[in-house]
Image (cartoon, rainbow over all chains, first blue to last red; front, side, top):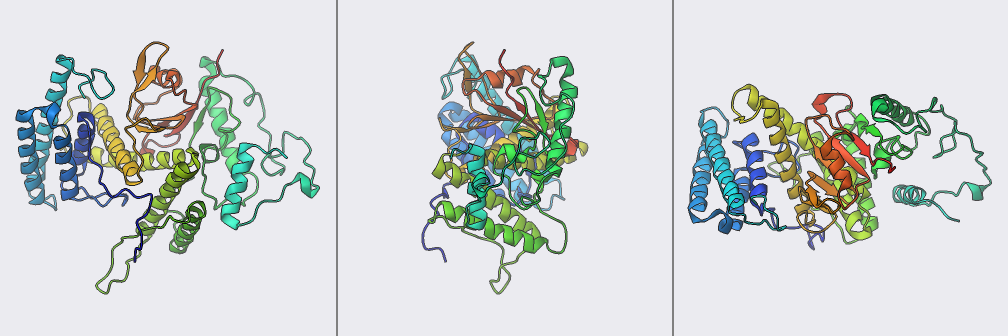
Length: 131
Length: 336
């Protein structure tokens, strides 16, 4: 029985905090859909934990995304999650449909980053990178 | 008596393993005469490096040959000397890459395969070996910080008895190794162990992502805007960076701030007001995940060495599926 928290363990889950970090999160999800099971057993990943990270990232970058894109991304993520949930064995084709929605999310993120570069908006380091 | 940082580290590792400080050789009356064919670590007779490989600064034209010689020397070093360190887990890149410690600037040192032995020996004693290693690592971390403890949440059967598998034990050992590295970094301010564990973690994730990406590409289920190989490399990078951020976050390490541990952050080169973004940086070592073979002649690598944190090494990590020399260390070129 645990009597005290491990002083080195951070109970707060990782949430991507920039558009490029969300893009990395998305890349990982595209590879490991529909279960997102971590075959190396380092992480206890599942469909809920991975979509929580993705939508949590949208929340953190909402201002940068703009309301229209944010709403579109939340909708795409909800639809993708439902498709993956309905095909956990990757046998009925819904995983491919869900992955196509993740590709759409990629496109929206790319569009957001291009817009920021075009508008010369700086990232957290003060550089114009689209982040 | 003055001892080097490496000797101090070895003494510390010995103390962690045995609870005893190692004997001081010279105080014990044993005189080690200088002989280039004696291993400086233990005084045992060994084979000389031969030729001029160890002393000649490589020119770009001879670099391939030099790299080969250094890699061959590394293999010899791994094979010689006492076997007392067979079960010692390497805690620094110098110990992980035999030949790196005495290599000249501008060298390329290939990784030994056993660094990525994630599962340990494949025989009937594997489980016992892994359990022993878990206990060893646990006691090492507790020796550094008695408040540390391992919170284990694993699968159980219907009666609540933990289900123990070799794969699960192996994951636990890898987890403990990473935790030990994080504790050493935070308590002692020594990032060398975290450099080794970062390399091992990245290698494991790169291998897994490469396998999965190839599987999806072959079945036409992965969208590739670019050439397939570029697309695959891109997915491997993303999977590695995402995993590394998450891993550091679990252990309370902020990889997006000004700390010496950073994932894909801007590293300035104030000499020409540019910057580079290594996939990861742990103190004075940069890590680059790639499918390409990169050398000191690669502009990106030169850029890493020129950044303001002045990395002493750039580790090039390619999937294990690439075979021999998939992953290697580039040492900082000697300044003219």
